[in-house]
Length: 167
Image (cartoon, rainbow, N blue to C red; front, side, top):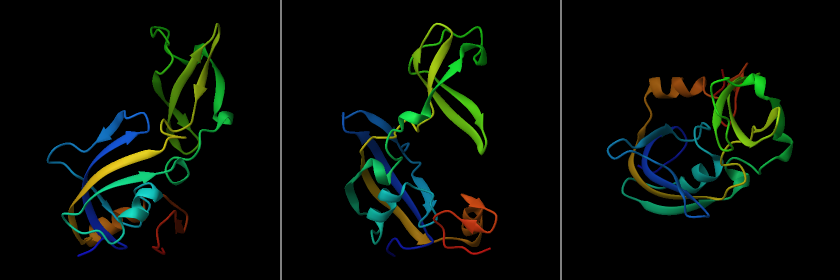
């Protein structure tokens, strides 16, 4: 079976960026599993996997526009140090979890000033070209339960982001 809309797919992968730094990988014996075509992966990776089958290996490059988008300087904002725990020595690069209007959001400290920090609300990989070294280890029809689980991922009201389900 080839990768197609609503197929369950599992891949082993290594993710690097242009600098060569490895930023993520699947654990040995624990491939990343997902339902294809329902917005569970970044669009640029998903598009390039269409039609692949078990045993296929590929090195796939994904530009920032089809991954986490460009780095947006408007998402770097000052936040008072009083919003952070008193017992933590704040340093650039530290990541905290905050609460946004749509749920939890990661906040990375870009710099530390006298009375505030410059907080970067961009995804940590925003602006990065991503390089995936993948191997497809499973492709099959998704079960009813797996398809149902995708209905709630990225859904608002009566539509799904990147999903062709209608409910």
